[in-house]
Image (cartoon, rainbow, N blue to C red; front, side, top):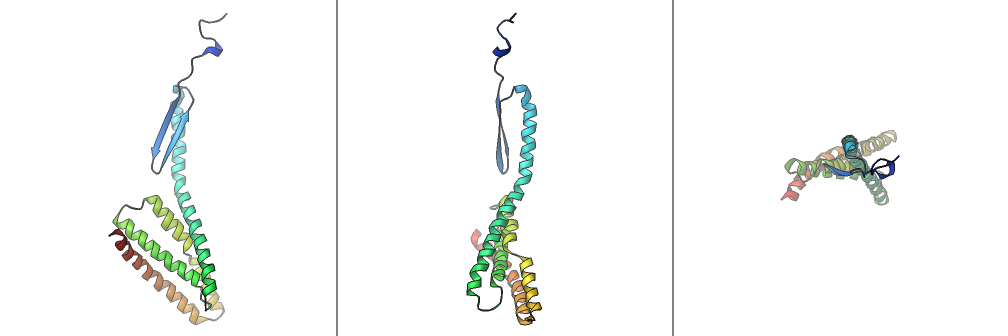
Length: 181
């Protein structure tokens, strides 16, 4: 015996919905082909995944920045090895000084304006400059000079790196003023 008008195969189509969750720095679009009564549970699920994605994105920015910075530092070291007249590790010195200059520019711009979003600061300062500059290489190369009893090179490399990094950071701050004018 059939019921009037609606059997198992003749059910009315369930209502569907689309929910858009907007959150900085992304838009998460959740398409739902479920009955409207399930949308509340679905929205909770979308919000949960959206929050997970939002929490994960800073790590992605830092990771991509670090990758680009590390590749740039390696390339700079290869280039400076060809032109190095002395045993001084100019690639590490140049990457540390340039990184301090870049961080100075980022700090100056971030302090005075909102041109750089928090995500861009993570990408450039924490990520790129963190991968580009390297304290571990500096200490390793300094230790090599000391082990080889090249104290003149060790002391000049130490002073050039520390004094140069401070000067480069201040120059970066001044450069940010010129950029913002």
